[in-house]
Structures are given as C-alpha cells and as structure tokens.
Image (cartoon, rainbow, N blue to C red):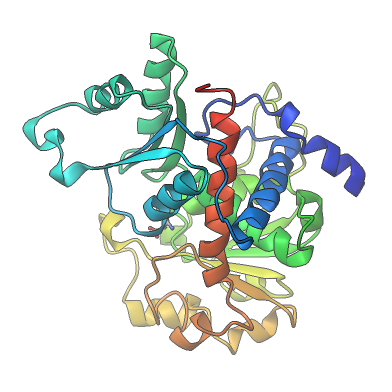
Length: 348
Ligand code: NCD
C-alpha cells in the first residue's frame, strides 16, 4: 500500500493531462487523488464566506442535456458559477433538435458561441465520446465532460461518491488509499446503471472489495469479467476485486458501505422483476438488513430514489446511516474540481 505522502504527491495537479473526462476505465490512482485533493481545496472555498473563486472567469461552460436531470445538471451549473464561468443551459425538448438538427450540429452551434467546456448527457452510450472526437478532429480546445451516456458511464457521479466516502473516513485529506480492503456492496439495477459501471472502475482501482448484488435478470454473469482489461491497458496492473451475488446477504455481510441503485423502469424493455413489492422484499435495503454489515455502515444512493423500493423510506432520511444528502453537497466541489482540471489553461 502506498504511503499517504506518496498518495499526496500522486495527486498533484501537475500530473493531470486529461482534456476530456469520458470514462473512468483508464483513470489512474494518481488521477483519482488529483480529483480528491482539488475537490478538498474547493470544498474549503464553498464553506467559506465568499463561496466563489475567479478561476474560470471569462470561460463558457455549456450544459448539453439531451435527457432529463435534476441534480447533475444543477450541480454542474452551480459548480461553473462558483468558479465564475459563464454558463449556458441547453434542454433538448425546447431546442432546434425538435426541428431535426443533429447532435453534432447542436454542439458546433455552441462551439461557435465560444464554449470552452461542454457537459453532455444523452440517453445513448457514446454521444459525449463522439462529440469529443469531433472537437479533436476540428482541432479546437473544448473540454468534454460526460454527465451520463446511456448505460455506459457517469464519471462525475462515481467521483463524487468516491469523494463522499473518502472524506468521511479522513475529512480534509481524502485519498483512494483509504479504501484499501474496505467492503463495498453495490445493490440494485446494475444492468441498466451507468453509475454502477463508473463506480466499479473507481472503487476497484482504490483497492476496495466490490460486491455486486441483484437478481440475475439485473446482473448478468458477464459482470464478473467487467474489469478484465488487455495487458496493454494503462490500468491493467491494478489488481481489482469484483464479485457478483444473486442474493443480497453475502454482499451485505460485513460491508463498510452499501450503494443502492434506482430500478430504471424507463430502460427496462421486458418485465425483469416480478413486482416492486417482491423486489423490495428480496433486495430492498432496510434498517434490519443493515445489521449484517459493519456497525458503522453507511448507505449511498445517486438519486433519484424510488422510496420504499430499493431503500426503505425511513432509512433514506436517517443521517446516522444515509450519505444521500452529503453526496449531493459533495457533488458541487467535485464538479468544480473537474471543470477546473479540464478548464485550466484555456481562456486568458
Ligand atoms: C443517475 C443517472 O441519471 O444516471 N442519477 C444521477 O445522475 N444522479 C441514476 C439514475 O437515474 O437512477
């Protein structure tokens, strides 16, 4: 295990070369620590009186959300404002896309207005990657942040989850090494979840033992091999621990953290569970089920929540166990960190 000093050095912003954040599959431990340390500094700004820094003054951040969102869109908007950037919010339903404009043409329209960073959410996997490739082809320095693409990835959510957990273990000095050997259960609709996929990359990279639990229809066996990468891959050297369970109990036993996921009914093309009631009986996270876990276990959920389905309503609101509100709060500092890291050096 690396020392805290090595972890701190690996997290220096001078090691950051990424211009887009599209996926966590190739994130290195040093990059995770850079995000955690930058978010820690920015959280200090947010807890001060001014709550704002001039870092991205004059830069334009455009939120391109082709799919509904409450917290991610607002969180990126607030993060951009706290960094003094200008922000444009695009909503597909009221845009020229209803007149047949393509996604790339929409992106190029915002490029022509001087956008420096585009934050993109789309229901199809690969859209942020396609826009990033087009920006690179055009030779323009626009940073692309994936804010959720289909069932593929949701990097900023996993990074804020990582920050929330590490910051709880060691407030003020979070680094991924703190998760070494911790048991983390991810429970729910894993098949449809981009949040689960991004979290699997970040949590296994930190040395945590990640246990997935869901009925087989929501957790295909191939998830066992999810983190296997070719030898040539930049993070192939990390030993990642991932186990799947079709029952809840083995995943919860002695868990330090439990991450619950929404049942994504809008993405289900078939009836994958008998009923919501039965799902709650078998996989719902409740106070009594948490007794299997470590006594100081904490529960996370990316939101939005189906109260009483994936998690019992009373547990969700219990600050002794629930980190749901701190996830939302942490999201602002983490998204400020991401905008800062990919926006640095742009503008004047
Ligand atoms: C998630 C998303 O949209 O992927 N929510 C979020 O961004 N906080 C999860 C979900 O929709 O269930």
